[in-house]
Length: 243
Length: 250
Ligand SMILES: Nc1ncnc2c1ncn2[C@@H]1O[C@H](COP(=O)(O)OP(=O)(O)OP(=O)(O)O)[C@@H](O)[C@H]1O
Ligand SMILES: [Mg+2]
Image (cartoon, rainbow over all chains, first blue to last red; front, side):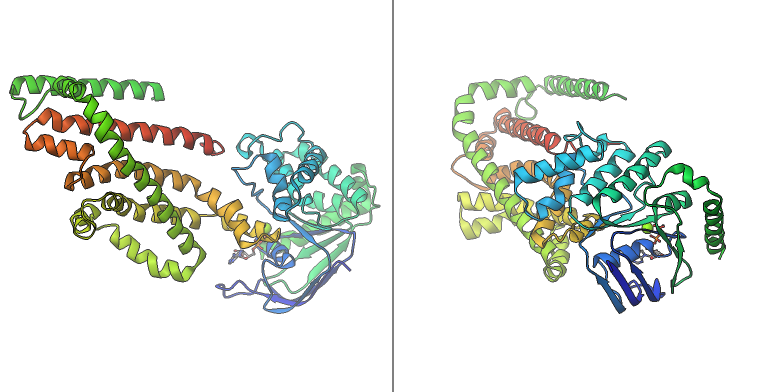
C-alpha cells in the first residue's frame, strides 16, 4: 500500500462547506491512478492533503512514499533558468553542486530539452515549461508522483507523445503515479485505475478499473470494451457537471 | 511611439528649456536674479578646483554612506517584519504614518542633538530614506506567490531557504524601485544637511555663495548634484537591467 485515506474530512479554514467528508480510498504501490472529476470538486486539494501541505480536520492519511508534487500551473521560478529550476529540490536537499548538475542534465535530456539549460521560463513555450516542471518533480527523487493536470497546457501532438513518454517512464521507473486529468481519453490511456470524484462534498470515489495491459498502445483505445468504458465515464462526469 | 523617438523628443525639449532660460536671463539682464546657464557653467569652470576637489568628495561621502545605511537598515526592518507578523502588525501602521512626516523638517532637531557632524548628515539621509525602503521591500516580500511557496514546502524547504530561494528574488523588482528613490533622496538629503551647516560639501558651498549674493555660484553645485543623481540612477538602471533580465515584459 502506497497511500491510504481513512475517513478523511477536510474543509478550508474560512469556508463553510467541506470539500470531502468521511472519504476513504487506497492506492497500490507502483500503480498509475487517475483522479477525474468536475472542476472545483477537490482534486488539487486531495493532492495537497497527500503532500502534507494541508491537514484534514478528521481522519487519517497514511502515505508511505516520498511524494513529488507537480502543480497545476508550472510555477517555474522566473528568475531561474531551466537547469536551476530543475535543481530547486536538489538545492533544498543540499545535494553537492557537481552531482546536482549531473542529475539535472540527465533529467533535462529525459524530458527532451537538451540545449535549453540556460534559457529562462519566459523564453519557453507552455509545453516546454510543463516539461521543465516535470523534470523538477522527478528531481525530488520521490517514489510517488502527484501530477496535477500535467499535460493540460500542451498542444495535442506534444500531449500525445508526452502521454506515451509518461507510460514508458512509469514502466521503467517503478514509481507510483497519481494523475489529475479532465480528459477522459488521457485517463483511460494512461491509468490502470480511474477514481471519479463525485458530489459536494466528496464522500466516496467511484472506482473504474481499465482493462488494458501495462504496455498498451493507442490503438487499444479502439477496443469495443474501452469505448464503452469511456462512454460510461463521460456519462458520469456529465451528470456531475449538470448537478 | 518608439523609445528612440521619446528620447529625441525629451532631449529636444531639454535644449528648448535651456534656450528659454538663456533668453530669459538675457531679457532680465541681472545675474543676481537669474544667471544664465552659460554664466553658471562659467562659474563652475572657474571654481572647479574647489568644487570638485573639496566639496564634491565631502558630499559624495555622505551620499554613499547614507544610501548604504538606508538600504541596510530599511531592508533589515522589512525582513524583521516579514519574519514576524507581530512585528509587522506593530511597526507597519506607524511606518505608513511617519512616511507622511516631512523628515527634512526634522533635520534641525538632529543638529541640536548631534551638532554639525558627519553623523548628523548621514542620519538626515537615512531618515529621509529608510521608511520608504522598508515599506517597498516589505510589500515585495509579502507579494511572494503563495503557490510557489507551497511548492517549496512540498520539497521540505526550511524557512531560510524559502527566504533565499523565493521571497528575496520575488522582492527584487521592489528593491530596485526603492533603490532609485534612495539615490535621489540621498543626494537631496545630503545637500539639505550640508545647507544646515557643515565645513565642506556642495550644500555648504551653495549656501556660502548665497551669502555673497552669487546666484551663479549658488546654482553651480546644484547642477553638479543633479548630474550626480542622474549618473547614479543610470548606473542602478544598468544593474537592474542585468539582474532582472528574467522579467517577462509582455
Ligand atoms: N486555499 C483555498 N482556500 C479556500 N478555498 C479553496 C482554496 N483552494 C481551493 N479552494 C476551493 O476548494 C474547492 C476545490 O478546489 P480544488 O483546487 O481542489 O479543485 P480541483 O478539483 O482541483 O479543480 P480544477 O479541476 O479546476 O483544478 C474549490 O471550490 C475552491 O474554490
Ligand atoms: Mg486542480
